[in-house]
Length: 286
Image (tube, rainbow, N blue to C red; front, top):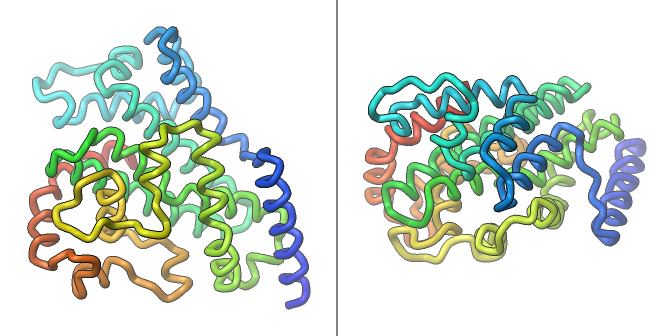
């Protein structure tokens, strides 16, 4: 017990110091995501330059080609067999999302603690589920860009991801995962915001992560923040920290209809968006 408290305090002090200095330390597995994003954001980057970076990561290359050949993105069925054509087909927004998904999956698999690896894997599956619903809802409701919604959905657990990765330096924390979940809950928002800023995301995406007032209160969802909120509540794969803390957001939204969401209206949206959700979920996770 004392060792947990000592290491938790040391971890908190380190995170706080890094946030104050604006120098949050990233796991190396996120480097590829940052490289792809910065190239994609640079108007002087060529398609071939971006594709060359993608080709350095075999798993990312495979996922890009697989997504490009998904029926929703390739309705005419002409097979795409190379990374350059695949990047052009799926677009840079989807590429950013896939790059992060691959990095997060690798991060989940690399954790040396089996308990933390299981939590990280659950976070990855949850974020992929949220991203897929966000894409499907934005597409169905014509609320902004579905690709942007998908990328934002992949980032919903980014603060928790980083905290789990960094917890490898504090092995006592794995011995009480419920208390660790409470620790993560306290630090998730400031760490998540710092990461979003490090990724130099547009303000429109950063503002969508509204922790204080996440939903506008009317139906249907009218902006990216609303889409993320409903997608998070609709995710069928739970966030492992929600389970550790005894919460179940999906049960709440489908049965008690918080914030002006009627159960019947949400059920209808889930039914109409399910096909697109399945396509994107398969493209990202397989």
